[in-house]
Length: 111
Length: 115
Image 1 (cartoon, rainbow over the protein chains, first blue to last red):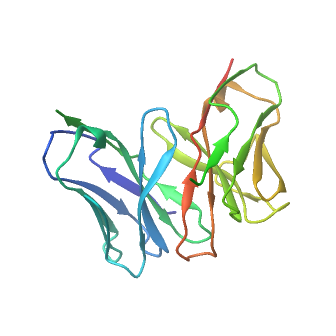
Image 2 (image 1 turned 120 degrees about the vertical axis):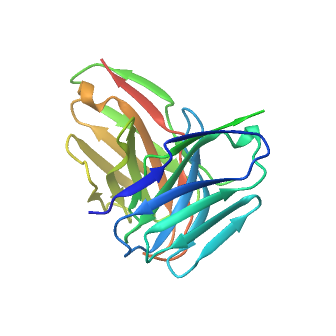
């Protein structure tokens, strides 16, 4: 059974820092991996999707990498801002578009 | 702007009631999903549907059923609500065939409390 783990569970950094969020998964047979953002009490917003054949995806200050063979993905956030404060979730698709989620990393950016 | 709309943000229901959670998407997506989110357990898939009148069980279907009579609408039904069904419920939709590049869009969620 696929398991997705995100480390750390919570992270607090000063504004302006570059930071990395980690995601690991136990079964490398995935179609793709997605990173989502969730604000308190709200739904999920899709940030980046990496196909299994890709190594990375970029959107603005966000860069996500995927190493399928080692079962790892990282989300890099450059020049963090207070508005980046949220919970970040990674999810893997093993087929049929059913996602298996990690528990998330709660990120706080301090002004 | 594309949207997945859940009819209620907050609901309070009594134990034993039949509860309907509604989800509508305006993107002509084939696929729709219901998840619940609980502290410490993350998001778990309840049911999903790849087409009208089609449904498949997810990881935790017990105590739930679904209905998809129209492509844009996917309803989650709690047949007899219980306190352990107190949770945040999230609806999502996506397009495309399995494994293809697709967009996965979530609604804002319904926080259900069963008393």
